[in-house]
Image (cartoon, helix red, strand yellow):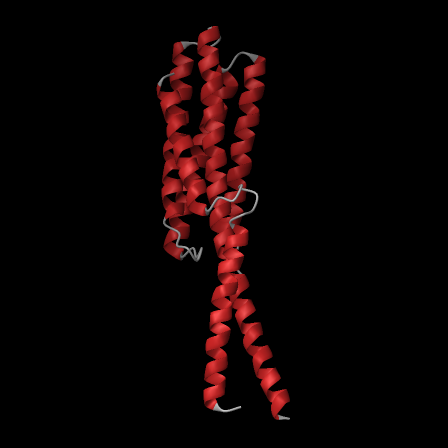
Length: 59
Length: 158
């Protein structure tokens, strides 16, 4: 194998890795949290925390 | 011989790629689990606040007792808000560096500390047995969530 061929192979592998990462992230994001990403779950947590605060302050 | 060398090279590159990929996926999963824990803690707070509201309506809790519980519940709320803020700072790769880990452990520790005091106060001040049972269940939920968060944060990534 020449150096150019090896370089080309590494570039192809890097591209394949990136594509695989995107696919894995997509699959992970469609898991038990009903397809929510980390930030979507955090937004929900924040809203619920704020709602809790309102109820607590009204006690 | 040349073909065998090519196949070996391809195989080695692919192994390297997949090893890196599994490491990155583990990090993102950890961040999502932390987010879910904080969501669970938020939901449990709503549960406790709702049952205390009912206790106020039923007149089964004094004003003094209510103020004490309200104080500790607000501390849990504030600490959880800090934990949510810290988790939000975790990047898309899910990597939790030393500073982020310290910040998250500190916030989780604050939630835990406030929860212990809330639990102690609740045992003494919530007189209605059904409400106390519901309170215990919600506190247990939060305690379990906190334990999971600590394990997630101190666990070393492979």
